[in-house]
Amino acid sequence: DGFEVLDAIRQMSHLQQVPVLVITAKDILPEDRARLNGRIAAIIQKGPRQREELLHEVRDILQRRRQKLAATSPQVRVSSIDESSLSQ
Image (tube, rainbow, N blue to C red; front, side):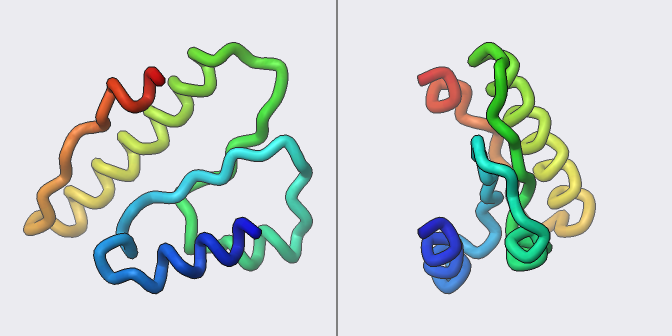
């Protein structure tokens, strides 16, 4: 279950700041959105789009997250997106 995975990630101190993206083909119920609120970076609905469009959206979300983190926590080193892993 995705909620259990998210709980496990958030309990590990070295992974607490890792942005989690939920990519789903399902409609997310309001109560599930409430459970995810504040714990994930974004929800991306799958749909009739090309792979490159999806990757572009993921890159944009991660870039915005990186910029926000750099602005609010200058002592935290923010690395760039690993383009090779996104292209696989």
